[in-house]
Amino acid sequence: MSRLFTPFSLGPVELPNRVVVSPMCQYSANDGVPGDWHLHHLMQFGYSGAGLVMVEATGVERRGRITHGCLGLYSDDCEAALSRIINSVRRVSGSTRFGIQLAHAGRKASANVPWVNAGAPLGDGEDPWKTVGPSAVPFGEGWHIPEALDEKGIERTTAAFVDAALRAARIGFDVVEVHAAHGYLLHEFLSPLSNFRQDSYGGSLESRMRFPLNIVRAVRAAVPREVVVGARITGSDWDEKGLGPEDAVLFARELKSLGAGYVCVSSGGILPSIRVPSTPGYNVPIAAKVKGEAGVPVRAVGMIVTPEQAEEVVAAGKADLVCMARAFLDNPRWVWHAAELLGASAHYPLQYARAKRSLWPGAEIARPFKPGNHD
Ligand SMILES: Cc1cc2nc3c(=O)[nH]c(=O)nc-3n(C[C@H](O)[C@H](O)[C@H](O)COP(=O)(O)O)c2cc1C
Image (cartoon, rainbow, N blue to C red):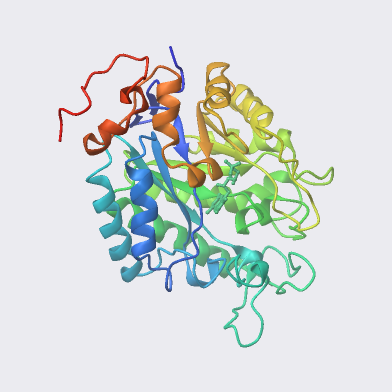
């Protein structure tokens, strides 16, 4: 029996299976407000049969967006538009649940969308904005020099996360994920490669964790108990002077003690010079370590592509959930095909039922519908 297609209780939220659509920026919003592209993008995943669909990194404040096109949740307009889309998607989505990733891009903000100038920092005339970070040190050559957040800025950012989380809860998201990976603001505070502060937010790991943990604590306290609060964390900076799996375990333990319902173990992104070893399942060993040593539900991500691979990760107990990004962009029907391959079932819209491969003429698997009788 497939383990991938067994339900999973993420705290109070019941997922029909362990497949998660990873958060994926679409760079297609207007001042944070989603439109038709997002409706289409999320709709296809809404009826994909996945257990959980994560909405992309969503800026908690305007200056926390990566690009002018990034999704936001900092205004009534943002909330109304996203609410309309999620309500539409939910109407066709069976038992799939929905989450949103709340983010602040920190010193990697104020950049072009990836398909313009390869995502380089916005130049004069492209409406750049002042970025913020733990220290006044840019991401890399040519990047904006951020303003080091002072105590007031830290409070303001925490409040922005809480406001956005409340908006997410009002929209009806089941899961709110705090983005603490990929070189964005919270990861910048966590990593010794980007945090050079000498105050109580810098220095030891304990101090570097302070701001991200305060945010998770504040978000957890603000949203109703039935909303799961989790985090995407860094399993490794892939640099010996940076964060590693041991740090991920310690951070995950702290998150758990604050009531986080899960962590998603990702990695990389803190410096442009560092290469991530993108081999199949490259974060899975770190995810397994975090699961074993922090005792919190774990989602694994990174080059998990085939159904057999996803099944093995879950069946071997390396992670509770698997998360896929590019595989879903390539094939939004991934779950349907994986379920058939693994002899399991998943939500399949009745309107499309005749497309099930097991029903095609010549298919050897038993046919619950007779092709031709349903015209
Ligand atoms: C188009 C695209 C957009 C992405 N946007 C986000 C994002 O909003 N938040 C995030 O945490 N990761 C983001 N990622 C990273 C993915 O969620 C995922 O962690 C990464 O692609 C590795 O998984 P994969 O090998 O299944 O693609 C993005 C990836 C892609 C391809």
